[in-house]
Image (cartoon, rainbow, N blue to C red; front, side, top):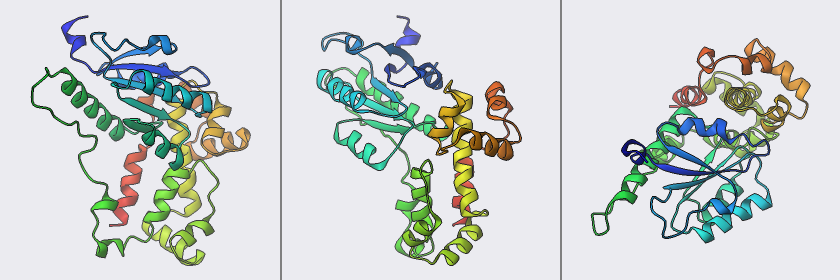
Length: 284
């Protein structure tokens, strides 16, 4: 192994996706990291092996019991190596389960540019920590540099952020059916007041906001994976692939297939984190 390669964080990557398309995702972590695809539990290194991986990554699209049990078995066999769980299908219950089971990090796919950079920094910090000789000063890797805005706000500012609960729920559950009435109740408002305040602060209506979230996620999947278009439709919350194709064309001006054939650099659609930042700025 070259000195240059040795300076990179080493990732052992388990592909647990239904389409076996992890290579599309791992490309986001190379060349900053050295990624090795794993094929079953036999790929796990022995405890006394030199150059152990800095991280074991398990990539899911829709986690099932066998995949989650595999995570537990990997944690049991290699307890000294931290684990990252990456998943397309996300829920709060799944995230809580992952951390309770000993996962070091939990990431929802597709990753935004900011989230990817944060994670790469954490990997570099972790790699540097694990390379330090025994007895040297121990450093703790930092997973995030700043507290989320919702934590840093004081009580007075929170009083002026009545939509945060709804926006947070949409961010986590836009792949599911979300009723405006439920969001209004979550924010302790009538539907009329919620609708008016949502459009006033976000610049677009509630349904359009949810649709935008789904379209952004669909575009990311189409550009960065080989998942079939029909599967992408289901993953972002559509029950009918034909309706998804029509909605996608109406939103972007071209079909999902045309989007996949285009180069990522050609898209002019703002990234999700940029759009989310605009919505957050309007709430300040």
